[in-house]
Length: 365
Ligand SMILES: *Cc1c(COP(=O)(O)O)cnc(C)c1O
Image (cartoon, rainbow, N blue to C red; front, side):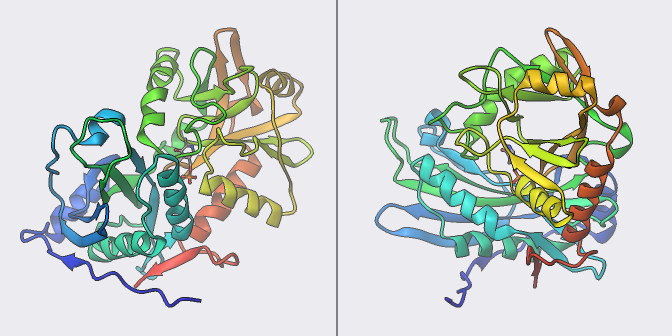
């Protein structure tokens, strides 16, 4: 095993930092993605030179050439992870190595420079250490961390860029969907698709999200909170939501989620929940599941529960599915027992309240 080498970030702390009272008022009801921490990490890549000038700076606007590739050809990838406040006040990260690895795979798919996993982890941990006070109390929420990379080379020729910036910013995140609001309603998108075989569906790139927004608008126009995408070829098989994976629970205690075959994002929450489900003795199947089968199983009662999962909202129960053809109700529109139990098991580990038997949690020192 290599001893991890700490990247020597040049740290420039913000001069006029928020007072504890100002911070407390901002963090009391943070919503999602509005209250940002005070610093950002920036590392530059230049072809021939590699990654250089690692810095942590006061959060500030970027200066970009208007011809920067990211602005024209969307060479951009990102990650989403969280810092949790443990009962003893320490900051915890959940499986940050999995985010670092996925970031490398996304970079590979989008022909971008590879950020070494140690550099990724150093940038995240050093930013969280400096902005630790911005992690909300455990009963309020978390600090959502957004590592991302953009192609900064000024060149309008279509080619992989020779210059990149890797950045990390962070924002406070309250409960993504209000707990009291109960299960969400989901629009089954039959018009547009999110990903196709051989496409970029497995990469966490901004373009995938841009392409999913019309479906999101359609969902909203139909009174739904979220979208469910189907496969691109047959428009039959369930794939995933716009930014979350989907899991079904059956009356025999079986858990089913679509398999990872290149069009579905490899969610770390998905993987963790499947592991916890197996720990609980549940049978986990990663198999294709047709939307018409879901409608039939919901009607017969064989399908007991369904939920969406991802870092931001953790586990979100699904109460209804709507499409142009009609409405389908799951579990009488109520949150299911297994959904609740899995959510609790995962959150207890993430917040340092339960024993971490899988070695998922890393304390930020
Ligand atoms: C990030 C993301 C997910 C969830 O991944 P997690 O690692 O669980 O946060 C699911 N689908 C898409 C499209 C995503 O971008």
